[in-house]
Length: 457
Image (cartoon, rainbow, N blue to C red):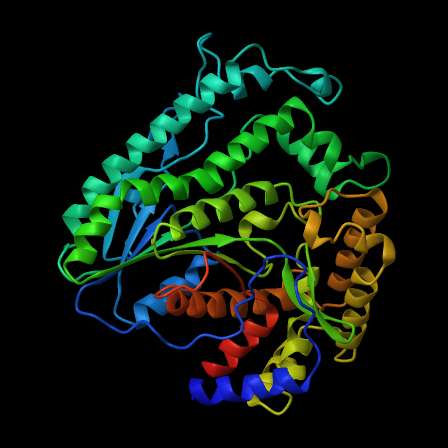
């Protein structure tokens, strides 16, 4: 069935001029075939902690269907004295084949410098009136960053020792899934500032550039890189010996990571690239892509998949990130107008609205936002990630609220269903494409999401 869909997909794509090419080196994933097969010794290793409603759940489901054993990990927890510890027996996951209880927390915001103070310690007395005047003393940040980097590398070494007790090295098929992201410093002053950056309107609006160019922004930039990007670098480097032994025996090792760098969605009459702004973590996502490219050039099967926006537990601070997701149904209508899955989706989603015809109003709201000339200035692939403007952020938040108001229940939104479709389709695509990735970085757009969803239904 998937092969037939590939043929159908190509015909549709050639017939409709709905694709606008990226202006840079982006490589959208338009299609892929089922490449991975079931093997007697196959493992999906989740490097990082898997939480509910996250992207990686789709990958876990796909791997499980193909007989892969699931190895889970943890970032650990902090005790009352803020010391990093492994999970307690009652905290360990039970829905996996193996669990490695080595804390993989990355970042350095809790690491103490030569004065015995961590970045969090130095920020704890700051308030909304004096945060902008704060400066890091001497080599404080550099010292904390070095300690955090070294701590994490040692944790990975310990982690690999435990992994080698689980995974046989002869003819094994091993897929590493890098789940590390985030790195927001755990100082009380940070979240109020970020709320103003991502949700502020009127007098509460704060330009993202003002925050990003401050000393606290400097900490965020460095910590985001440590958590999001350099963790992949360390993982691939520290598993070199294991990877080489497995491949020498006829086995297979590959790595996938979850990125974000905007998404192609249906806007107006075309498939166009758009992005959420301000996405300050985007700088670290670019660094993650660079890490993948470095190892890919050395022959390692690694790929960062830039996935579409979904609504997750961790994305709640980025209100408005979900606006693009409301356009997903249109791709089904454009590509597969007569398919049963399309009809079911329309029925399922309109059931959540106050009136079925409000679906067209939602499309209009999405188009009006992304086609606004002022908004377009903050949606520029060549200069991604872009900082916010007051007009753009307030309009984004306004559109988000207006769309939510179209629903019968603000706790049951269309984007909940859409998010599940996205992470399932991404999981399918990443699982199979990463077996022999053609690129170190791929973009998964709404078109591929529909292609995969229809192929599985």
